Image (cartoon, rainbow, N blue to C red):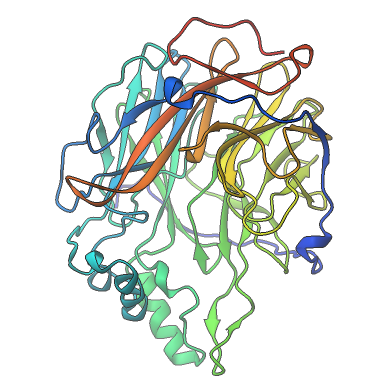
Length: 454
């Protein structure tokens, strides 16, 4: 292992909130501006990578899946997009039962997707990147970051004020053990040792000093919770330190009764690094004993606070002390079920904060606040403004003129490489002014700059 790589064990002070039923979580204050005007999404949408457009160089096990994109606008003006090239929604090393997944979980997936049983991709999906130097009109050919079995996608990517780029991804080869750990101590320890031996659920942090042309891994750490998922946000503080918002399940084993204890709820975890991502310490846990708090995108607001919204309830949390303590949750959407899924959180130069998300039957959608999270502007109480009905798990960046470029993916279709393809989509829009009646306006990618989105 290179000298600069560090294996860490993290400790946190865990504090959970009292049990709160989802229906009892109050809603945020909303400014509902009415029905949306119809939009010609196909006219403005661009496909950046797919099984037929700018396709990555095929490798063993590539099945035409090009998804999970993240976009960053660099200080030199380039648009930099990372994505996962693989064969399925989760392109772990395959066949799954031969590369770390427990047999019972692999069989469950094979029953649902029979073709996975014979799929051979020993290294799993690849983390890749493309860039544009003309505001998205044209894009480079895909290039690979590195091959780490189980690290099939990038959770987030950012460029610090000094020009250094950072990225983070989960190394996940044994996801299926969650909820399938034995109840007895020895058997539990045996399975945990197997997971540890293949470095599953470890987080890898990468660094680039040349605007993303080359990358090196600077740290790799286990935990801090037993089962971890992809890091959701990398964010720079005012003093140049790094924050990482990630997520995990505190404990997940099977009782003799066959039930899980405790009920497996995801919690969000805020970590901090003061040495360029080499070591990480715990700041806080944001969780609730009654429902999941996960897939949050963290950003600063105009008043100096920070906040994020979480899957699945759309619960909004805000902190005024750099993430040490958090507000009580308030829901951004009304309704029940999966109201919100993974997306992004952006701050415009004029102090408007924008959340990109999907869920509630609406894929790419937008909601925003002009007053640091006190009031949220939306077309209805149930969802945000539609920006692209194909964009699953949207991510965005702010362009020079204040407009927003959003990337997402459209997945699950048969293609020449396999039965479960995906394509990276892109669309551009601006936030309308209050005088215009609020909402969004779609714009051509690479088109003329617009006036400031006030």
